[in-house]
Image (cartoon, rainbow, N blue to C red):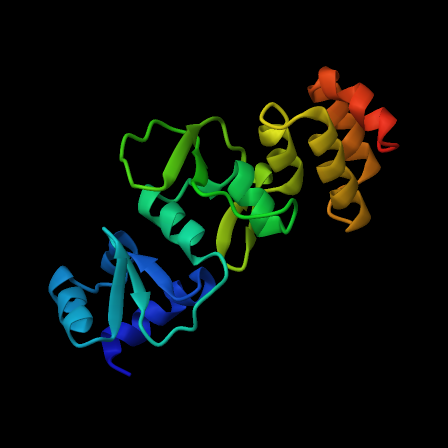
Length: 188
């Protein structure tokens, strides 16, 4: 393996074989080297400023990871995308949802950017993808789904050990309109 690729491996490994142009520059890998490795077939470029080690095996949530890397280091998959990454609900949404705690004005087809405070304890990593925690994800989607669907998601999270009853009570306090639905579903 070439020296430039070797130094990028440590950055790319926890990010499912991906890294950003800025991360490459931090490792003293120039744009010229990135172009050379891309032309040689060692790298692919799934988005502007985002690279992938070509030999790296495909990962389940690669599109969400690429969207987060493209937006920047404070981005996390959220809302319906986070539900899918956590294995809650039925399917991956047609649009990738990503939350950032700051103003971001870029646009990318198929990516919906949400702007909201995003404390460190509301973000985790799953398969290399920065993603909102189950609790934060449920708070985010609570206004977007009906009460029955929300109660079903909370029940599923409880059954799988992804959420504690104490956190469910916090959800009910955070979204009072859902407290009744949670109680009726036996999860309040």
